[in-house]
Amino acid sequence: MDLTRELSEALAAANRAGDFIRAEYDAFVPIPDAPSHICTHADIGAQDIILKNLLKAFPSDGFCAEESTALISVANADRVWVVDPIDGTRGFATKNGEFSVMIGLTVKNRPVLGVVLEPIQRRTTYATLGEGCFAIHGDSAPVRCRVSDCSVLESATLTTSHMNPGKPLKPVIRKLQPGTIHQTFSAGVKLALVARGEVDLYVNDYPEFHDWDICAGHVLVVEAGGIVTEFDGGAVQYGRVGAKRRGGMVATNGPLQEEVLKRLAGVVPA
Image 1 (cartoon, one colour):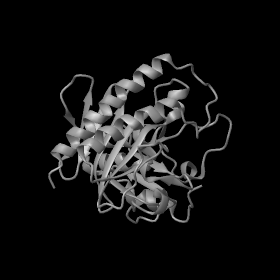
Image 2 (cartoon, rainbow, N blue to C red; image 1 turned 90 degrees about the vertical axis):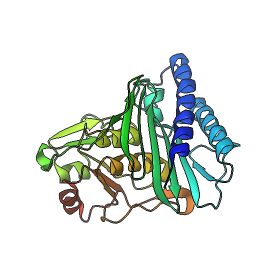
Image 3 (cartoon, one colour; image 1 turned 90 degrees about the horizontal axis):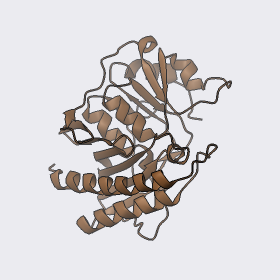
Image 4 (cartoon, rainbow, N blue to C red; image 1 turned 180 degrees about the vertical axis):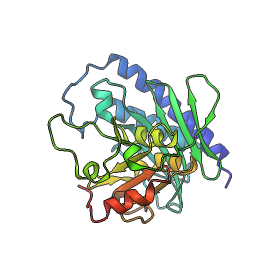
């Protein structure tokens, strides 16, 4: 499957959105206690930029995106672009820089392309089916990404969302007992970290999330040599009604996958 043009257009759309987001970020007054569901004008503006570019290049494709804007068009198509204009909006709103632009493409509900741009870090991690995963930092040349080779959970680094100090650890963390915990906003950032081998695993234990939260990052991890499944070990299914996900997600470097799933047996995303 030749996705050269699709990747080129997705990278261009992400970069245009990134330029817009950086300008908005510089002028944004931080909201220290921003809620997880916050949506800003930057989210909507960035999504419009992405959709305009992709609609112009691929007018027959379907589109599935997070924000409700005039340009949104979820078509009954074999090819669907899955877009989260600012994943981890709390990172934008609090101005800690932990957020990403996520653009994925599915073909017959199979993820085949992913672009995750971290605008503030000026880092892009991208992948297409069968062609590997690569990262660009600033103006550097693309570098091929590989997942880590860690095989012992007690020595592994798990990336998770920021935890409230003083509160008990989540059941997933208590079950897995990783050696180190890396906290950050944005599932896109977390999945890119796994793909680049900077952490060893990421577990999404939200009771409900959406295709746009994980699609682009899913492709990165797989093409970097990792494994992505639901909590029960089954394949992550895209294109369901409302683009909703309820089976959780486990993304690891591969050697850790079996043990992670074993320890999560019976755990319900919550």
